[in-house]
Length: 161
Image (cartoon, rainbow, N blue to C red; front, side):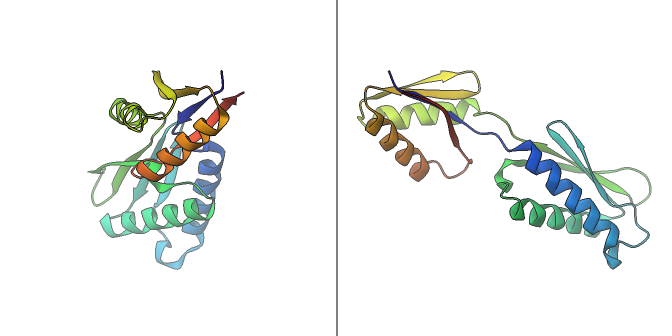
């Protein structure tokens, strides 16, 4: 029976490349001269460092622009609150979302069931598996999800025929 998985995960190689490019631009920009502004990366977590809130916003804008150029959807980023380190220096933790969260998974299953298509959706951990008798039904389900789910970037992988 044909099936595919609905997942939501960023390409971490492209995220790392975007971080490297952002750090390179921050080092060469005149308005960051002499400041301790940078972006650090640990697995699914980015940490933005800056001298003050204004520079933190600038670091964020540089990071977003580099991610956009690398075709990484910025909706994967989940910004934490700004913390003071010492003096005026600040940092912000940004988590890179991975997986379809519980509420979104339930929404996807409900959309598929309400559409009266001849496909079934089931939650499989941090992804949603959609199975159907025909490949055309699965393609219609993909089209439906692309149209109706806009708040989170979705990928469709593991297609089996």
